Image (cartoon, rainbow, N blue to C red; front, side, top):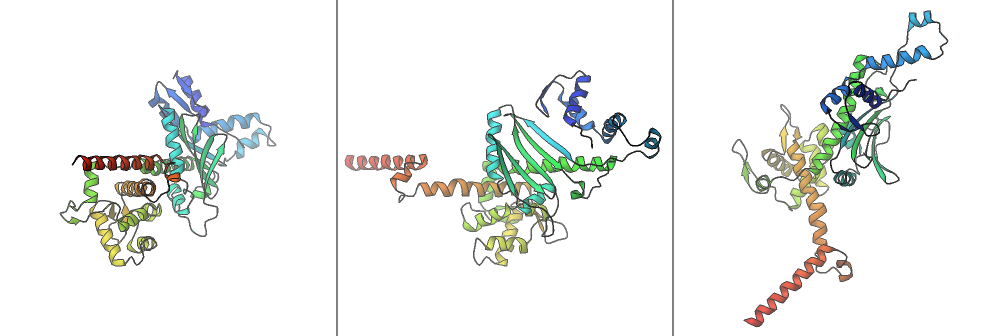
Amino acid sequence: MDYLNGHEWAKRQAAREGIDFEPLDNGFRACDRSERLTGICDSLSERDIFAFCDRWMRQLPSPFTAAERGRYGYRYSVRQLELSDTRVFDRPQAGRAWFEQTIRDQLDLGRPDKVQIVFDRRVTSRTPGRFQTKVITKGVEPVIQAHYRHSKVKQYFKEGRALRTETTVNDPYDFGVNRTLTADTWQQLRTIGDDINDRLLDAQLQACSCAPDPTTLERLVSPSTDKDGQPAPALHFGDPRVMALLACLCSFQHLFAGLTNRTLRPQIAEIIPNYSTGQMTYDLRRLRRKGLIRRIPRSQRYQLTAFGRRTAVFFTKTHVRIVNPSLAELDPQLPDEIANHHPLARAWRAYEHALEDKIRQAAITA
C-alpha cells in the first residue's frame, strides 16, 4: 500500500517552477502566482500516482521476477482519498469568530436529511452507518465532522488563520465508484470530494450572509405583485403562521427532494395546530409569487430558491435568536436579580426610569 501527499507534490512542482510560496502545513498560506499554483494543484492526475507507485514497486522486494512483473503488472485500488479546501483569512480573528458561529449553526448537521444534502446521496432506513454531528476538541481546536457510511467530511480552523474543509472517501463504493484506480475513477472521486466541500460551505454561507436589503425586506413584509402582475400577499414578520412556515423551509430535506403540499404541511401542523391543506396551498402560492420557491416543470413539486433559503434563515434566526430572547429580557415581571445580569434588560429599565422622570418633570412644569 502506497501513500501520496498531494500537498507535498504540489509544493515540489511549484518549487521547480520557481514559484515563491509560504506553506501552511498541508496547504499554502500565501503565493505570488496563485493562478499558476491553482493550475498545478488541479493537474495532479492518476498518471502521477501510477508513476509514484511504479517507482516504489521497482525498489521494494517482490516475490515475482522481473519477467513476471512485466507480464502481469499491477492494478492499484483506492483505499482512502482526501480532498480539501483551504481558505486563508486576511484577519484571522474574524475567521475564528466565523467558525465559532458556524459550529453553533451546524450542530444538527448530522441529521440524515442534512447529511444527504452534503454527500448528495439519499439516506434511508437501509443505509448503513450513523448520522450525527461530532464537535471534537483537541486542546482548543474544535473540529466539525459529519459521516456518510464509511466516508466523512470534517472542518476545522487551521493554525489559527485558515478554514480547512476536508472530505475523506474511505470506500469509493459509498458513491457507486469502482475502487480500481483509472482515469475515470480518479476524476469521479475528485469531483465527488470537491462537490461535497462546496455544498457544505455553500450551506454555511447561506446561513451567514442572509440579511436582505431594505427594499427587498419591505417587498417581503408588505403586499406586492410578482413579475406576472399577480398579487403576492405579505409575509408579516412575527406572525406565528409565517414564522412556522419559514422555519420549516429551513429543513435541508427540501434542498434535496424539493417540497410539496403533502411533505411541507405536516411539519407546519406540528407548530400550528389544525393547519389545513387549503392554508398550505395559499402559502405555497405566496411563497412562489414572492420568489422564495419555484415550481418544478410538469410536476406539483416546488424547489426552494437560494433567495428563499436566505430569507427563511434570516427570518427564523432573527425571530428565534434575537426577538424572542430580547422580549423575555424586557419582561417587566422579570426579577431584578435576573434582569441585572442582562445588558439589554438593564438598558431598557434605565430608559424606562429616565422616561418616567421626564414625564414627572413635565407634569410639575405644567
